[in-house]
Length: 88
Image 1 (cartoon, rainbow, N blue to C red):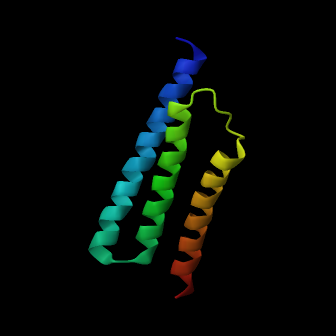
Image 2: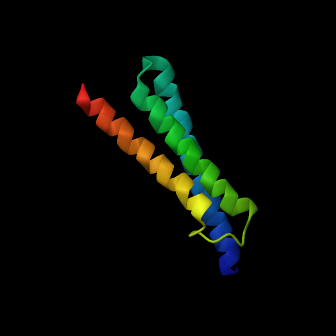
């Protein structure tokens, strides 16, 4: 098995895990209507979309600025959610 096929498999697995985490947090947001869970769900969906780009474009470099900015926005959203939750 080539390393490119293995990378595609791992990207797909991370994409699936991120999407599953997003659905998990979305379920809790619907139960509690807490902004914290909504922001976490949005961040994990953004991470899933970011990994989806790696799956459909196999020769994409991880240091690509627009892909990196999606990851940065997702982690910023997680940070904002944590800070917002601890402020109250």
